[in-house]
Length: 341
Ligand SMILES: [Zn+2]
Image (cartoon, rainbow, N blue to C red):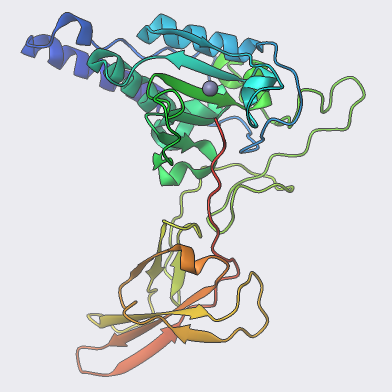
């Protein structure tokens, strides 16, 4: 995947040079090259969002190396890594594992170069972000996070100044492994265990928790699981309809009807929601959602804590009606909480 991405940018660069109307400063640099030993088939284990909990502001090696890589490749300068522990709110800067890359959204050339860097990091479900140990990136009042990669770039609230809104710098927070330069971008070998602090598993401290996968029916977890895969949902033919999607406000749930209906049937949908909040309600009472008769349903704040099911009615070419209802979701809708940056 990485090699293909590299080829893509080479083709783009070639096209630009043929067109030759692009000013010199807009020439697109090559993406950084991964180590020669890099395996394409696995990414590093990652624990999702682990916020700052300690005071350890010295700049960590992975943060320094990534900031240097960005500046060497795309220009710009440093707005710093360390921040004193007494200042402001929770921030990975206070653990030396967040970096600020000075670039300005108002400068077209800088904005274009940042765009390329961000695409490099976030493409393919954040493959390079996994390899660098990135937790989240903030730029131009938008946030991308590895633990909600399927949501893409999300708008953030207006915090006031251009600096607070990250219009004059890119903020990148790293996992402890990214910060310690222990991830595969630097070592060539994907990490099998993720560390949730500088100390876990080192020097007699408690072992690091096992890395957990994020599944479509969970927010990035905090307990033990085994595999890590980007949260891509692949529906399969089923004898009852099924709900898919991420149970997060702003996301869209959908229904896979299944293979139980007669060929050529027309399908009708009706979404239902619980009266009470879950998760894990026993014999929950459901009510019809007025107007929710499409195969997709977009979640709103009013849905937080609720569970869903969908009735699918198939009308066969001869007019025969058959209905099947999904199982109720075992998860409840959640709201995303954004980190401070
Ligand atoms: Zn920052």
